[in-house]
Image 1 (tube, rainbow, N blue to C red):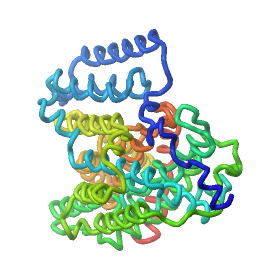
Image 2: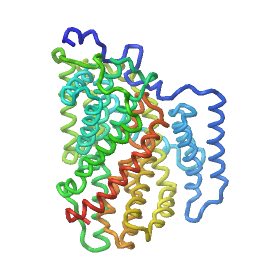
Image 3: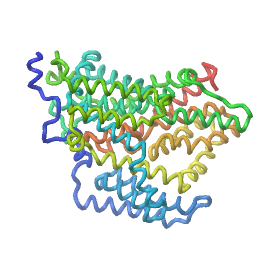
Image 4: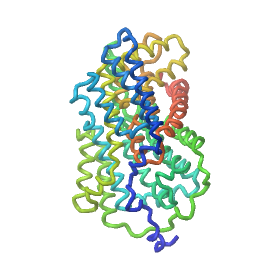
Length: 492
């Protein structure tokens, strides 16, 4: 395809489609009867849990929280009603059932983490609108080729490794908007999604999430786990166990290679594309000279990456850097803020806000601590593999319903004393937590999956179909790493 012919191929969505098809994220149309039945089932589940006697050591607010949480998760996964509506109803339910005050229930929708995700998704709209998505695709295809297996493997490993250094949400938005032009050129839209599009759009966020634990830069859960370990060992032994940057990298980063390969494998097996090679419509042999807006956005984006990397030195929150970058995108007229708002998937942002709100309520109501106290002691006396796997599974389940940092903060104060009582390495248990909380089973579990879901190319049930076996497989890989690799390098 010549450079002249490329101009005739529209690698962006047509003007009448949003760059991110949030209207498709609601899932397929359902009959009124189906919706009513699902809503009644959710209501029945909630009333059934609420009617049960409050277990010992579970605060009444925690009991009410569980009676709200389970129906909400059911409605989200079944997509009985638009997930944004369920998200708003969940926050309202926290207030109605007196689990949280109104301010505490709604404040997380504008929390720093949620606002950062909002702005990162806006970055994706910018990349698409100025034409950088097409250019990114050109270089990816130039390096990886057009063979679907080879290209997807490159994308998976690349997403995992990059996410160990940069924020996984940033890597997800770059990769997804680089890949979307392939589907647009092939006529694959959100409402005509097939195995090829589902494979790539689900692969990218899972691969990115699977790498966030690789270095201390990959996410807040990593330095948090190191900090909790140092405080715990200082209090109980008088000597703090400090894990430095290089030591942490040696301990954790090699595991990323295995999680990347396993992520690619499980996604490929479940959504095996029938296409072996990308068709001619998706290939590009040349590109026109980079435009002013493309160059400007690239430079601003690169500067944002640098600033994100040194936030420990500057003290700036990542959302501050994102806001400055958006200002720099719009001020010169490279893109209008109205265009960004028009093409932004607001529903996804609302769902993530609700997830953070529910996660906070799980902690404040005492439900999270109660669940940990009920489940984790059951692991006592089991073989080491089963114990580590059980601890990891608990972290994954909690992380699927709250931020991974919150899941680490919730679980470690319980698992570290338990590990010491069982004669296990507290260092291993502490550094296991940031890994396993990277693996989630629900779309609401982390920013990368929310970003991918906002494109509308897959349903929540399709995501769960992949995420559950993916999570279980990666937990096995991680536990084997704890038992085999860590002792090999003298860490136990």
